[in-house]
Image (cartoon, rainbow, N blue to C red; front, side):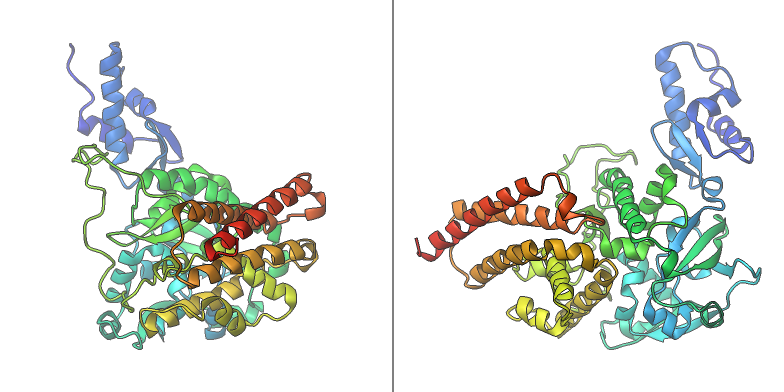
Length: 493
């Protein structure tokens, strides 16, 4: 066998020699820059695997497949994405970096080091310290992951030590962009978005312009959310509870560059509105997961890409100390409901909220008492966090409510919600429910949830649904099944 010319040094030099405008490349292209590949198939495969391993270990590149890569800085150059400042930020004249920029700049750029300017002005927006209740801005930091949030709060200001020490009443001080003049001069208001352009991925520099709410399409937003869910699904499946959420999002955008652009949704809107992707709490912190999917089981001896025995990529550290402001679960609506023994799902909650909008009431207090009046929270902090999440959900869904289309599904939704309330009341009675009946109730709940998702799908038109009659027939069957099961459980049959 001839001397091996594919040394680490030769491969790294070949990677450095790639033309400046290169975006995508393969292991074979890198090999061609070094010299001819071996004729022997096994030796050839070993060389390509060696190149892929070296390229995959570099922060300069995205690994898109076994032998295909992208140069991060070139891939993200001049790409656009949306940021939707909250009403709280607009009223305060600020913009929190939060998780908004993290997937679109180098991991080496710290959150508060990002620079942002207006398209018509080369001078970056000034930054300032801003003191607030962290729960007011938790949602726009959530996709950093709890570990990065903890690091951020720790590093931003020494006064944050009181909050990190566990005092839920303590304020935090964070670095924000001063956008007061920009908001005022552009007439920026709730529902508007910032079309943000990546000017320098490695340096974390961005520019932005205003996109009025009237120029944003709800259908385009909902379609984008679906496309983003589809793009994230395989990345999430491969990540297994990886708490580096910005990297997961970045990889999804790298694989699906159609997600970039001035149409669609912001990350804030995505995590609030997605019906397929959710944040969960793991042993090391929060991570992204697909709703309804359990974490895969792994053999302790299974090998992973790091070369060590499989260690599940999460230790036993739990959530970072200082973010546990309550003794109970606080990670998400779904997690809190599950921990308190409620069988209400996020999809069902959304349907109750849409029902409130349809009735014209929009009474958060009334719905809260109706659905959660009997829940035994772990402590006041957990209930306060939960209540805040419910109020945010009310606000998030306001933009998605289409009164015209909703009128066609309101009666059916009302029947579904009646059945859901019967199930909730049954479980509040703390009866011993036989396994066979529990299975029937679970099957019915699963169907009702899928039906509600179908009815509330963006742009859904009940009168134009070719499967409408079949859905109604199936609904009647499941309604009868649940009612019969409840009668058997309560002894009425």
